Length: 409
Image (cartoon, rainbow, N blue to C red; front, side):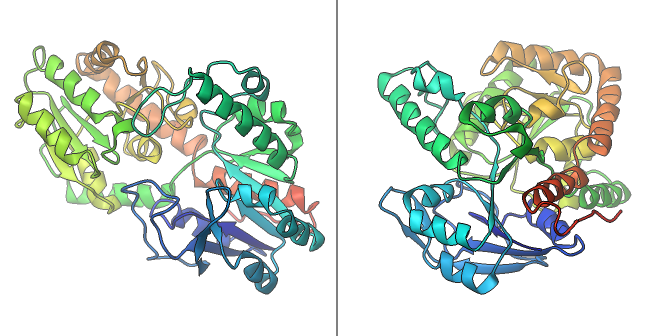
């Protein structure tokens, strides 16, 4: 079986997952990725082609008449590679709607189409066509779900989604909410597969072992919390810094490690100076080496996200950290159990964030208990084997088990 993945970038966190997928017996993986990496990927996302074992084809993207980018020589690549399955993502899925000739050529070849999605902040179809308000945010954290124009945009997007969902043979999704949302667009449950979102946990557990052998970067402080993620508005690091300033009144030796870099770097440094927290908040910069990242985790007691996040939650849990977060990319609902391995605070509510952090720091016995529970969730519920299994199930479904793919333990 040959599977062609469309990717908007080769990221350091997903490349290892694709490496493992490529090692599934009788599965040949080919990835088409953009030559230019600044169109369909978020600012500050780390990209690399190091350590890749699967085949990569770099394609030129062109802006299409509907306003999004697509690969210029996509069909030529299909003709040469002759895949059995195409995995397509947003916004590339739109080409199948606006270019019916390409779609017909793909269907004529008997190629199956699988859509990879989160789905995150996706409104149910009936709510969208009734122009109901829906809470979504743009990258500037501006609420955009209440205006008539926003609701009209969501209305037309819903119609568009209903159309492209009808073209698919299956969907693979990060979150279980797909079972409630996608059927409203006409997707039968048999075509919905859940893969969750995970780094290669074996790599991270190996890194954890090495980090423990080397030791933490700083002497462990039970009152040191850590944030990992790009420094962008929607990560709400500013909210976390402001919360730390208040908590410091009760816990003078509280510290915050900020791992990451991005466009908000200068503004956050200014905020720390204004709040007189230069000895409390330490900006480490971007860290992509898992062993070094692990040494920072070992220096800290609790992982906290002020805004949206993703795989950093998984990584922190591998290192046995309790998690405090609110809204993420949807995957946090599977990973974080309130009162079991962390706490969920009300989105954007600084006071609630302060209370949740204080609750853990003032009850250090829970830090150890919650941390152990985090590891249990990773070991048994969300890891790369679960991700690979979800993909294989979807591949076998759309090909009617023609290749009978099986995961080797």
